[in-house]
Image (cartoon, rainbow, N blue to C red; front, side):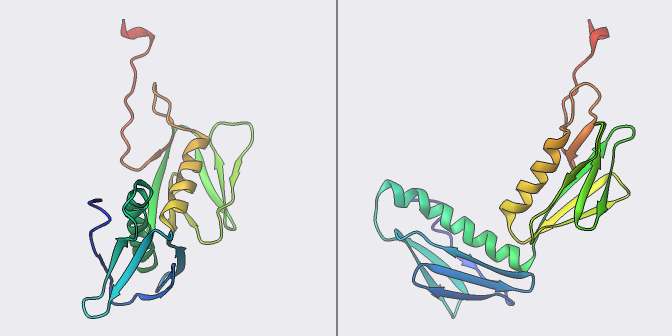
Length: 180
């Protein structure tokens, strides 16, 4: 039995849900998302308690894998359309900076050319004082993907710590040549 899958999903006040066979459509103040639930998983909506319950239609290994996954995806959809998700990154290094040109993020991080990152439709990128980047959106996986893509441009190096890192990420710095 999945510990995650058997937890009920509480619905906030301003969320509307439509369930048709294996499709679930979630609508909230930030936008709308939909997901096709695998055939092995069944979903039940309790109007009185404003909760969603997931059940396994079969009791095999494949159903066990998809049980907790489906619950987590639906929970993230509900959280995304009600509150949204965000990841914060910070740039450290002399001369390293970022700026927005329209919706595109332009990074100057020590290369001979600026690096341009084009976000997908539902993702918003904000830049504060040239060194702090915020990635916002309603889909948790897309927000994390774009944040990882930005970090991958110049990951923090282990000697001086220069590069792009997540906010509050700790980098274990190595001792240089003089550390013998």
